[in-house]
Length: 318
Image (cartoon, rainbow, N blue to C red; front, side, top):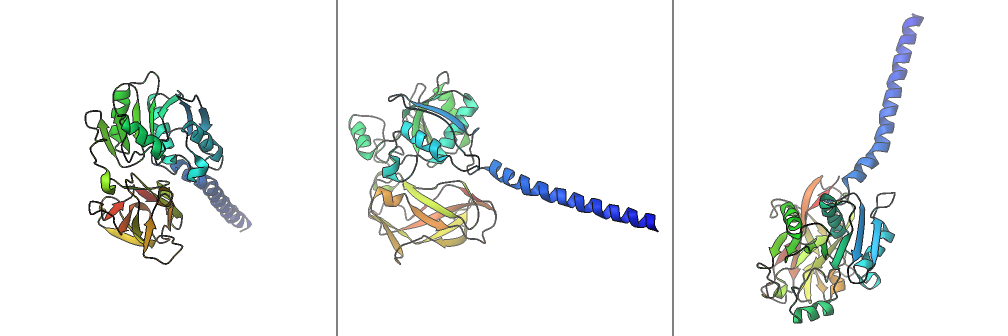
């Protein structure tokens, strides 16, 4: 009897030990799995080496800190290379853009220096180079800090353009030679012969674009929305926004409210800064999956301006 009791006791003890070890592994491995999933759909090895062709400013940095969050010091150095006025803008160069740049450079030339031909452009600078005949759109994504013209020594620009184009992830242009334009706005591509920069295609806010800071979020997390490719300010956005299905955008999943200091149903966007900082909370009860955010416009200054705009794809990790 005592022998049977001992067998039962040690069997139960073994089970408890096994359960304890499983729980311990889950506790430690879960954060690792979440960190590996990353905030963005396209991420390289997390290290990037960039140099500004004109100024010589250089950054050789790790993009994430030890906790897996964005490395603030690294992005400040990146902003310097891009000539991005961080304090004035109240933000950094688009992290999504930098992780895309890291991703594609790792595919074609890991550990090589990325040469920045053109980073941030102020609206005045962009207007001046347009007057001189440069291939710069009136609503250039460079103005909003979400674009870069770059090259990598030894890498064929046309082949790099074709590689990025095949991912259908972003804006990518090629005008010949090694230099490639990359931006984190809507997926599209062009060459010199198909560029529409001087056609008025983006007038009347026709190409206005909505983006989130990151690609992946937890339910209940605050999300920042930003507009880019704005040709004219002085329009409104409705405070109620819609979360829609990723593939069937007309299918509304749930709704949320923009965080609004006043109680207006129509929030006015009168300048570039106000267009870059709109916030809402991703509903707690939303299921894991991929979605888009729809913002409806009010007080549209032009009939050519769309009635609404959808964001990039986002993923809820709940």
